[in-house]
Every structure is written in C-alpha cells, then in structure tokens.
Image 1 (cartoon, rainbow, N blue to C red):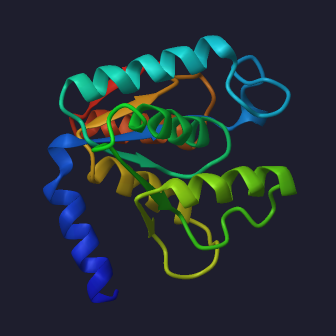
Image 2: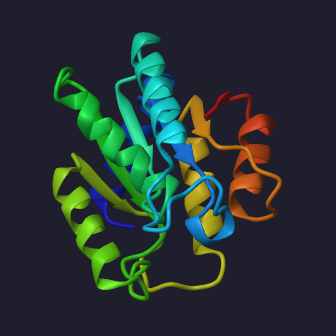
Image 3: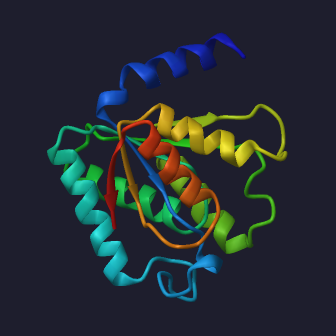
Length: 177
C-alpha cells in the first residue's frame, strides 16, 4: 500500500460520519427495476434522487459508489446532478480493481468513463486485476467508510444482500429506494 493510499483511507475513515455509500443489484438480476438499456426505471431513479437529497439534508457530503453497472452508476449520476446545486458534495468511486469493467459493452464503458471523469476521487480497493473476493472486499470498504447506505433491497442472493447484512451488523443507517 502506498502512502497516498494510506492517506486516502485515513481521510475516508475520518469523514465516515458524513459519508454515504450505495449498493444495488445489477440490471440483469432485476429486470423489473431497470429498463432494457440498463438504466434505472423512472420510479426508482426518482426515489434514489430523493434519498440522495435526504442524505444531503442530514449533513452527508461524501458519496461512495462502487462503480458497478446499474444502481452504482445511477447513484453516481444522482450525486453529479445534486452537485450542480450543491458544489460541496463529493463523489468518490471505490472500485474493486482496475479492470472491473473489462467485459462491459462499449456503451457501458463510455458511460462509466464519463462518470469517472466527474468523480472527485477514485480508490482502487484491490491493487491488481480482477480476482476472486475483490468485489466483497470493495463492498466491505464501502460499509467501513460510511455511516449510511442507500440501496435497493431485493430478495436476490448476492453482493447487495451481503452488503446490506454487513451494513446492519455495523449499525449503518440504511435507506431503501
């Protein structure tokens, strides 16, 4: 771990009381929540933006997105939109590894690249390429650095359910979209 990484981690933990993280299932796992193009349905997008506004009203200034397709990217877009009126908000991508988007379509990669350019910081939770366990490590990082989790609770087994369980175990406020 480099000094910059240690400093970033220290700052993240220091800002934990005013940091909100996002976690949600991927589009292919919840077709009723997402449109065919992978974006959130209008109802869920509206509720996500309302929860972001509510978090800002509670004093949250730092927002962590795990950079996954679907909810994570929608949340990043929501923070960027809110930042137009509140420029003090900070969007931070906590990515599982450098190449986590390697298998995405060119359109998905284009969207992600655009959002990364708008981020205030990017943290790679794992140093190397994708490996087993790096997504779970990223999810734990999100919870360990935040005091609130905005999510869509689904009955789908996987990373989002595990992240919600870990957030409950660590006494985070959980806001459901």
